[in-house]
Image 1 (cartoon, each protein chain N blue to C red):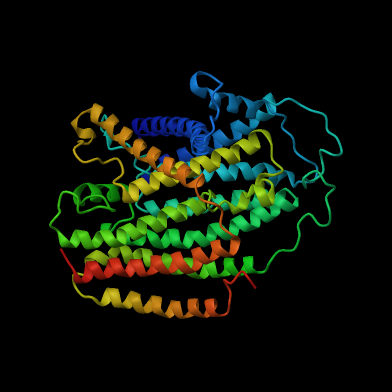
Image 2 (cartoon, chains in turn purple, blue):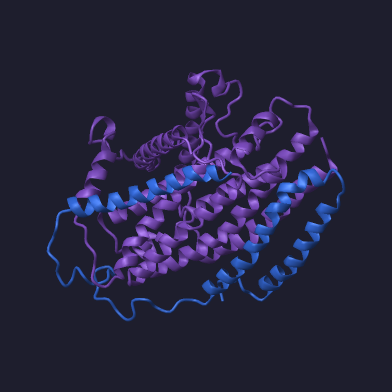
Length: 353
Length: 123
């Protein structure tokens, strides 16, 4: 094991974590400003110019609050739950390629061959944080929130898993860097016909890919417990849902985990369907470190655009009823995603390039 | 091969370290308050807590969990198929029809569950 490899890996991990935490902090600020914009209010605008220091004030507040553990909770699991809610969200980012190369170092922390399987395996651990929080709190609202959440998250995991299969029918590998490389050569997954307009095969392939994209995106909404799927914490019925009994940084970690899960979800959508760090006309990192930085910037711009859509949806749509939610996941999306796989497979088999 | 997983371990370590240090900082910096009897009760909108803290809940949640295991396994079977599909379809179309028949058999179970009302939350 050479030290150069270890050192660059550690540098990438720390840099990525710093960038993601920065985005996360300002996503909270952006969410409050965007919700204010949509509801015709002002939003936080007092701390610093245009309220830009609000995230720092929030972080300080989380740290300085009284750290209180009520007597009626199951102490060990009560403390474990916030960590379990956040660690999977951060860990998933390790396999996502967030840039081409910088000084010859590939901009992905761990380029493993099981790529997307690792993402699903770790992301589904996130449900434990919520269920354990709900159960260990020994209180009615968190308990109901936890039970609802476990059911919802596993239901939408089916659609999530099915929706990406057409991508791997095309790519033929589970490695996420290979998915990006394929999209550079053959055009982005949701619009492969760009630049190759007369190619009927690519127009046909765009149909299942677009369906996949929509199903995957909506499943990510459900997995991150955001409106219109925020039943685990539905504040009008369950007060705060699974984190009702939490305060100070323990609540802060749930909050952090939710936003980082949103960033991770967006990053995976970008990698699978929107070309990753690639943008037509921009060369990769082998043409100089400046282009390497531009690639990273392109990737995070796409992620930011998706996060904006997440927020837009949250402040526009009302919440589902529970039976509607389960019906949508199990009947509608499950069937559509399954048929979609065979649509893609038949196109590949009978309409070859 | 195994070398690819070393940064992953580092990454998980950093993630755990971040979570633990955030909690630790909150314990050290947080202002200690008085502990009162009311503060220790479960929160139910300011009312005195009533009944069991973990009430009975619908058996439907178990049913969903069981169905999930069944259908998630099916999805896991489809991944290796998806990975080799592009190479094998060139030789013969059998690889498409074999998977289609497998899914058809599974769908009989799915339709049965639907007809039995396993996913009908209104009842």
